[in-house]
Amino acid sequence: MKIHPLNLVVIVVYLLIMAGMGFWFMRRNNSSDVYFRAGGKLPWWAVSLSIYATMFSSITFISVPAMSFSGDMRYFVISFGIILLAPVVVKWYLPYFRKLNLTSAYEYLEQRFNLPCRLFASAAFSLFMIARTGIVAYLPSLAVSAVTGIDINVAIIAVTVITVLYCVVGGVEAVIWSDFVQSLILIGSTILIFALLVFGTDGGIAGFVKMGMDADKFRVFDFAFDWSKPCFWVMLVAGIVANLASYTSDQCVVQRYMTTPDIKGAGRSILFNGVLSFINCIVFFLIGVALWTFYRSHPGALAEGTKPDAVLPVFIANGLPVGVSGLVFAAIAAATMSTISSNLNSAASAVTVDFWERLVLRRRNVDAETCDRLKLRCAKIVTFVVGILGGVFALVLANADVGNIYDQFQRFLGILTGGLGCLFFMGIFMKRINGFGATCGLIANYLVCFGLDAVPWAGKPHMLLFGFLGMVTCLIVAPIASLKGKHK
Image 1 (cartoon, rainbow, N blue to C red):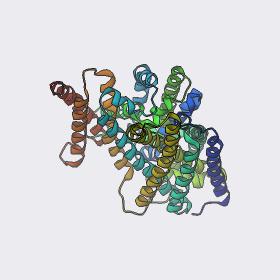
Image 2: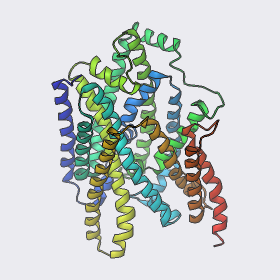
Image 3: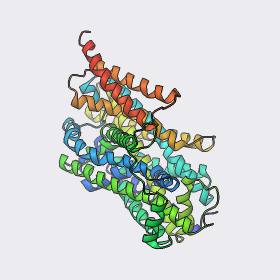
Image 4: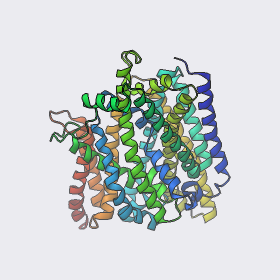
């Protein structure tokens, strides 16, 4: 199938508008504070939708419906984590970040523990951003290429180059306002797709519900006590750990806490994002069920052997009017670009503040104006470099024989971010933990996580529990090591 010229025009125009936003905001980037934190002057509702767009990547747009299309809705329980943790983040974590007036979240780790903890966390985050940028650019390009005929390498290069362009020149203000626009397109596209699928099912809403229930597609709660399967308890714990790490130690999110004028606005942005993300997750799992009922109602409309990850793009290409489908494909590009842009800007802020400013500029003893100018230049260079490295990684994935990259991404996410989330948890709630104990706990965390991942054995925990088990290990080892550290 080849993409219709009108759809191609819609996509190209959209990408050009996003690039134009970067140049519009370039005029205001006269300091590193504006580049990294937008001067702390952005409205909470724009920041909230930016957080939503950042956490809702194109992987979610494509892969969440694929899970309920091919199975059921048990993975939906993961989304309970954000509802449970949003008030916790607002009450206990947010005041720390705002009081310390941080640019990089990892500055806190040096103040609380030591410099090695800060540098390790910042480096781990930055490397993860390169990998996440590559995966986020690769997966949707793979699916869209399969149904439109656009060469996957062209799709990856186009999205990466445009995103890098507006991030380099526009800074976080361009990222947040482009996220705002993209989130509105995502929400509108989601509602449209769901409505068309349900009303295109035999019997409409009643038919959708009956067919889904008969096939047990709406199954969410599985209370079996089996830690090797995606039952309720496994998904709940995994969701809490994943969201704890994302909303307390991920620079992409924490950086946005500093872009509102006051702590009240930042708190509103977190709570509103939590509700919106929870509802969004419900809708996308239901879209997967609706895809199943739609194609059951239209036998032969879906080619045999179509992979679950390609089902939604196939419907967009075939089931939507010309022009509208182009806009929805632009929404997939929007989801991709919103996540990539956040990755690039956040990695730039982490590397610039935690390494360039902390290890180089402070030793040079330069004046404040020169320091700020050098930080701004470094941030733009790092944004460009991280974007290019992420794009290269995506091209490598596109031209290599890889397995289920989504599962690999989820496992890697749990293994890496659980330890970072644990550092912030110990820093705020465990006052007796010192730098030596935190470092030992972090090492123990990664030994457990990588050990579980590498060693095959019967009854092995579900991969989404690796991060949780690593955190538990860290919370046991760190207090013991802290006691020994006091005697050094």
